[in-house]
Structures are given as structure tokens and as C-alpha cells.
Length: 128
Image (cartoon, rainbow, N blue to C red; front, side, top):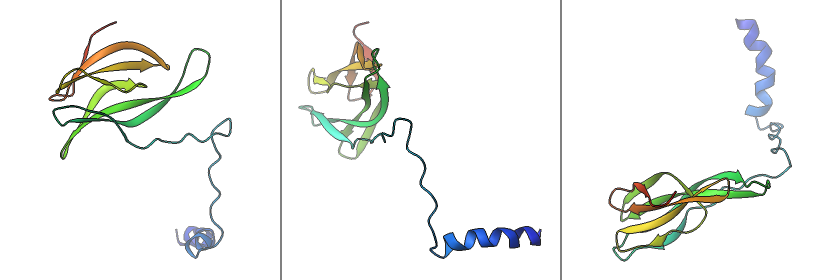
């Protein structure tokens, strides 16, 4: 066991002592590094709740063009409630002071409208 430590020590010393840095990981195929967008406010309801785009996922349409689909989060004061299983590309639209409509996106295309209440954050399907 001691011999293994001695053999590994010369490999660890340059990194620990500020020697040559480890090589960076290769960029993904195509040479384009995907940027993660920052959270962004997309809707403020009259009741004081805010709707934000938060996380995202990369997607491609039928022709292969890339897009980014974003998750929604409801914020009011210190409360943060994620809207589950709903990825959107368009900003939601207010229906009243506690409801908004969001369009589900899959493969960069709209696939249905959902009504979301800020009280529970659950999406309820409106159209197929």
C-alpha cells in the first residue's frame, strides 16, 4: 500500500502546488457551448405574484433548429413554487390576479395551453 502512495504522490504534487493545470474538458460536439440563461421575470399579476422563467432544457424542432425551453416558477415575497412538468418558450399571459395561461412547448413547438393558479402552482390542461 505504501508503494502505491509513493507512486501517486508525484502526480498529485504539481496540481497541489499550483503546477500545470488540468486540461479543460472538450466542448460538446459542434464546438458550441450551451449557455444557461439567467432567471428572468416574465409576468407580474395584479395580486402581487410574479412568474419567472428559471431552469431550461435545450431542444430541437423537426428541422433540427435548436431552441431553449424554460420552466416556470411562481414567486411572492419569500415563497417560490415551481410549476411542475411545464416547459415553455413564450411568456405566460395573466387571466386574473391569481391565474395565468402558459403554453407547453415540446421539441420547440406549442403542444397545449395550461391554466395555472398561483395558489397551488399546478398546471391544468385547457387544450390538447
